[in-house]
Image (cartoon, rainbow, N blue to C red; front, side, top):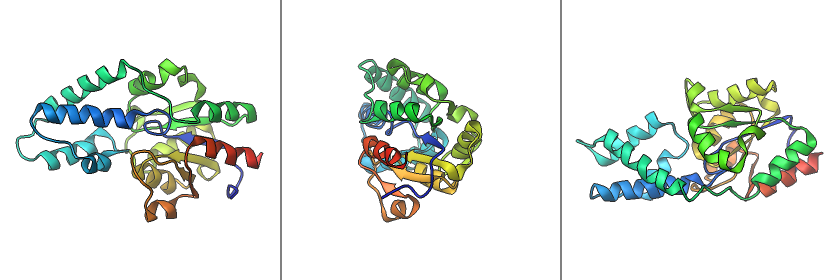
Length: 221
């Protein structure tokens, strides 16, 4: 399968696509839940993937019920996450190779993420990857987060490329919804969430990893 039209820029999600942070966040939440004598079901965590904090906080309060101390929870999760981060966050398969390919063919690229700029620097900085992106659209500059298309529209604008000429790469359902709503050619590279029939209708492809995406880009050159 070839891409539907020439790609003039690529917009990446970060967590779960470039770096293996989603599994680390889930472990941190499991530890925080254990600390208050309860559990964090994987199904509840899956609903939160790709959302900004405000939206995911609503899911947490719904799950844990009345009397839930959101501030204490957030502090505990952050502490556990920092402990996990000391061991380093692994890159997902194919990240370096696809960035090298984009360098070789001269395509601009951006990150559109629900995470903060600080989180981007913490996750990608140790791998010296921050400067390999031409724009960083973090939650710090977003008025509306995924699944709203704003993060992807801002990324396209920052790169000076029409949204329909951008390839968006996402691992989450909300991210796919946002990229598709922005009018981008969208590929899902699943991580913690399996593709659904909805995801198949919103994407041009479900890819096994970024190696497969790089091969698609190489085939159009």
